[in-house]
Structures are given as structure tokens and as C-alpha cells.
Length: 607
Image 1 (cartoon, one colour):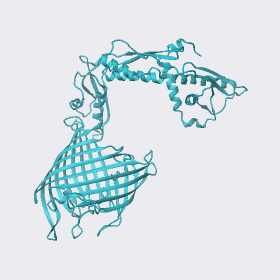
Image 2 (cartoon, one colour):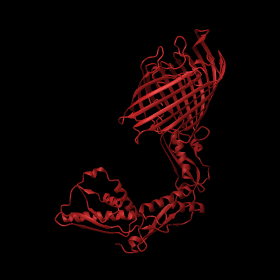
Image 3 (cartoon, rainbow, N blue to C red):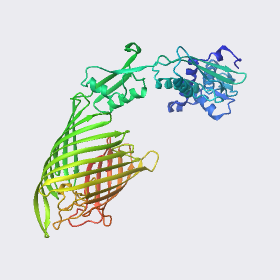
Image 4 (cartoon, rainbow, N blue to C red):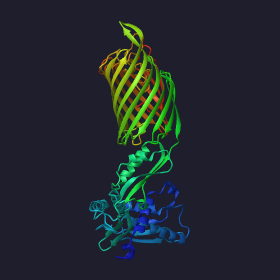
């Protein structure tokens, strides 16, 4: 047993602690590769505490076979004793007695006799400043961050962690160059106490200068400087530097982003710049996609995306979509951190054509949306749009159906919010989502009208097991148009339901009121709901069963009385970023013209 006040114990410093913690940590990380070992390298005798005994045994490890000689057995016993001592010290046992030995015979058993002794307790932890002391508030914060409670077990890991917390508190307070010097840890065997003293050099208080962009990338240094969440001369805060890195990374136009405080020798008038290194992603990419349903038909689309052409992390997305229902040529420019951080301005221009059972239209539209992000997945959007359309729609006059051509110029405002508390936007297994939007709209031309359109949807996801292999998903969607009636509300702006993202089992626009020739009329209110059971079978394959219901009403308030209901099953194939979805569904209360089976193919879950 080591004597009281020996240099070995009183001078226990950084290296000894690091070795002890490393051995203890490695003990927990031994893999099943050693599971084939036939015997422990050495037996443990005398440790009654099961947790401590397990840690020591894991540190000692196993061997493929027993020792074949007394020399080998004695070597194994000594090695096991050294590892046992490291574990004991790491767990706060300093008054131990560890004796390696071997049994009888030419191939004896190696063993270690251990008496752990009492646990050493923390006493009088202290910080000793090397050089200048920090200001009182930061010094007090460092003392509090140490958080070594008198009387707690004197574990090496706890002492090392305390030192790390002290340095973190100093850095948070503006002392970016704070560093630890060799600590002093005195173990007193007389009262089984450990007195750690941390020698800390706080260094000078650091103040920030501007931003220095390194490299020859496409990004404007002036724009990057605008993103910095600090002003010249402010005290250094590590979270401010990290926030600048997050803002740049969130733009999605860089392969890598590195933001770091400049070394002390680059200070100017006592202020240090922050160095930003940006690696641009390729100037452009091309994306291709496709969709299919038995009623909406096939569709293909391509996106030609250009990155950072204006030097402010901008994204220009040029879209060409050709489909049986919705075809369009569109350009959208996204400008992140537009006038202030976490705000994105999107400018869109589109030429489009819609061909549906309810109406046909050709239009040209422009819009501007400003989205502010709160947290990681909460958004508030304001927008304005202007569309010119030429629409052919069905109209009933004195019970006689006819086609009507309407040319309209439509001006709309937008207010929307989105809260996403799910774990994955494309394949959620837990959490919830809430979306809502309000659109005051005025249309001038053939049948002028002023109205308000509002929609909202709530979705929730509940895993039935710890791994999320089985999930119940549900959603409810409501919509209403106030201030208008049918036929004055343009057909392309009415509510319709049915289809892959709506009520499966019914064709596109097939849920809701119809004219006498079975053409969808659309409505002023909307109700949809879905309940889906999702089951993951393998890493890539899964299945689903679902029931959807919905109705479209001719009045402002949604009609819940006689919904159209569809049921079905589906297959999911996980692509890594989200699933390919194939659904087959049938209507439970079909009407004239409704198909018995509908097939839907798309990417991502239905909701």
C-alpha cells in the first residue's frame, strides 16, 4: 500500500490522470472481437463491488488460451495489476493494496489480489491563477463551473472534466487564450481526501475586430462581414463566432465552412479578427425527377441550380416541368440573410399551364416572399404575388352547363407560418408539424372579386417501439374561402381534393361537388384527414396501411357530414434521404366515374 504523502501520490498530475482515465474508458469500449477468448488474462480476487470488479476485469481483458509457462503467467499477472491500479485510481481508490501472483504448476493461473480500500473524497478544490487574474464576474463563473462538490468521490475523470469546465467558462467570458498549466492533486491517506488545485493562465481579455475572408472564392467579403453577430470592439464570445459559422453553413452553397478566431499575433490595436474559410460547391447542378399516378398521369421535371453567382450565397433554381396536369417554366432566386440574419428573400417568375378536369389555364406569374426562420424548423413568411391568367372553366347557368373563358389579373398577399417538430422532414417517425397560410386576394377582369383564402394542416407521428420501426402517423387539414361564392371565385383558386397528397383512393379533384356531367366543381371549404400505419421491414424496405377521408363544401365552413373515404396499402423503399412511395388505394364510397383502384408513385411520405 502506498505511504502517506509519497511523491507518487502528492504529485499525481495530468499524465497520471490521463492514463488512468484512458484505461478506464478503454475498458468500456472492448468489442466483441475478444468474445472468442477462452480465459481472462488474470483472475480478480477480493473485489466485492460488482461495478468496480467489472471495470477492472474489462481493463485486464482476455487471452486466447491459458499461460503455457510460469514466466508468461507472472507477466500476465503483473500487467493485470498495473491495469487494476489505473482503474482504481480513476475511480477514486488511492488506499488500495494490489498484489499480482500466480498459482501452482507449470502452467499456473495468473491472478491479482485486490483490496480497494476506502474511496478518496474531494476536499477544498481550488483555482490558482497564473499571471493576471480575470475580472471578478468571469472568475466567479469559473469557480462555479468547476463544480467539484466537497465529499464527492475523487475520480480522475471528474477532476479532468472540472478543468475543462473552468477553461470553457473563461472562454465564454472572453478569455479566448485561457490555458491550463500542470495541476496539483494531493492525496492525503490519513483522512482519505483529495485536494485538487488547478493552475490556470487566463490570459488577456480578447476583443473582436471584423471578419477576414481567406481564399479566392466567389463570396463577397463585405456580405460575410454583414453576417457577423458582433460589432467591432465587443468582447469575444465563442457562441457569436459559432453563430457566424452556422449562418454561412445554412445557406447550402458551400462544401465546407470554417470560422475561427485569429491568432494573438494578428491583433490590431488589441482587437483580433475572425478568419473565415469558405470552400464553394460546384457552380451548378442538375436535378431530375418524376412522378406518376393513375389519374394525374406522369410528370417529369428538371432543375438547373446555380450557386453563389452574385457573391452572397444566392441560389438560382431554373425549373422545367412537363406533366399532364401541371407544366411550367420557372426561375426562382433565393437570397439568404437578405436584410438581416435568418431572413430569406425569394423572387419567382413562372410561365405555367394547368390542364385538369375542372379547368384549363395558362398564366404568367411573379412573386416575392420573405421568410424569417426561428430556431431550426420554425418559419414565418410574408409575400406578394401578381398573376395574369387565361382560364377556361365550367359554369352552370339555369342548370345549363357551358364553358367560360376568364381573363384575370390576380393580386394576392400571403401570410404563413410553419412549425416542424418532427425528427425528419421527408421520413418522420416522431414529433409533429403545424402549417397555416392566409391569402387576401383581389382579381380584376372577367368577373372581379375580393376574397380571403385560409388553410391549415396539423400532422403528428408516434413510434410504437424504441427504434421507430412501427409508426402511427395522422393529419388533419382545413380550408376556407370567405368573401366569395361559386362561380365568382376563379376555378383555379377553389378547393379541390383527391389524389396522392390528398384523399387516396380517389382521382385528382374527384372529391367534392360535381356538375351534372360529372366535372369537378370545386368548393369554398376543405376538410381532409389521414391515419397511416407505417412498418419498417428492413433497412431499405417498408410497408404502410392507411385510411384517408375528405370533403369539399360549397359553403365557407368545412362540411364533416359525408366525407369520401379511401383505404389502401403501400410500399416504401428508403433512398437514404427519404423513401420512394408506391400506394394502391380504393374508394369505400365511390360515385359515378370513380375508378376502383388508384396507384400513386412519388418521393417522400404522403405527409
